[in-house]
Amino acid sequence: MADNFASQINRGDLGSSLIPDEVSQEIIQTIPQSSVMLTRAKRISMSSRKKTQPVLATLPDAYWVQEGALKQTSKTGWEDVQITAEELAVIVPIPDSVVDDAKINLWQTVKPLIAEAFGKKIDAAAIFGVDKPATWGTDILAGATAAKNTVAQGTGVDLAQDVATLGETLSRQGFAVNGFASQPGLNWQLVGLRNAQGTPIYTPSLAQGTPASLYGYPLNEVANGAWDATKGVLLAADWSKFVIGVRQDITYQVFDQGVISDSTGKVVYNLMQQDAKALRVVMRVGFAVANPVTRTVAKGKQFPAGFITPKAAA
Image 1 (cartoon, helix red, strand yellow):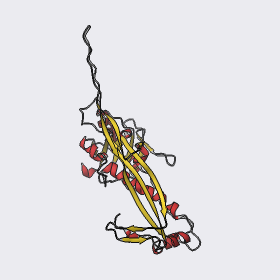
Image 2 (image 1 turned 90 degrees about the horizontal axis):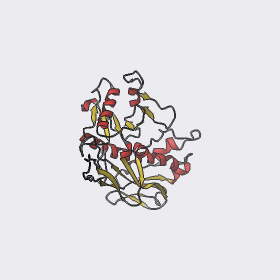
Image 3 (image 1 turned 60 degrees about the vertical axis):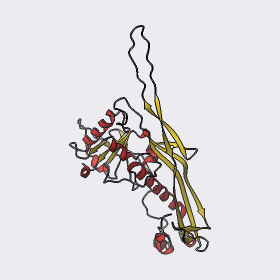
Image 4 (image 1 turned 45 degrees about the vertical axis):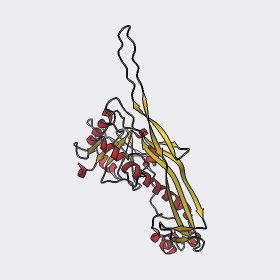
């Protein structure tokens, strides 16, 4: 566990906001943002730590046959992509006196924020490779860059043309874009853009929880803090090729006894002695990209995603 207990929750930290004298009954906070990977990628259940996902590696072929000649044979090959579930976890200690005196349910308030933090870690690792477990597959940005599926913003006359160019690049590799993810605030760059016929390419979301639409496909702004605007502006992808394996969904357990140690084994929190409880949260999840061969490019030249990159990265 990281040595980050200098910021432990205590009465002094929480007193002003969580233990009001008489008036406030709620915490004013940002609505927790969900994970775009857990929302959009193909999600599979895992019955063990590792699971094998077959991916098409060789396409069958066909041959003209002259009258009376023998028909030729063809083979189809599959490769195994292994998904390995790794553990995400955190322990949140809160003194009993703070829980007792607060006029809200602190545990229920903390839970969605922890879920948001888990989503941030998953998105950052899968999309940009940030703190990515070694057993996970190639992150999306690295795979897209290796396949040269990047378009620097400003390459075309506007962002609309850049997106269209990126979509064309993926189509030439045999993949159909079926959704986008982007940096927060991109909708304000898109709202005034039109296609060659003068039709808006972007449709804002009209209902809470419903993603906006770009060129008719859903667009999710990644607002949980995982998006790195210095590396990407927009991600276009065939999301069915991203696989999230869930071995254990998020579980919560409250402990009223026990000790919390730092990475050296030193006890930094004693729940019984310090009259506190701790919420332990655990999740086990894996990630991989299924990158099947296509008929439009040579094997190894394809990848089911691409990025609009910042102007500075041109």
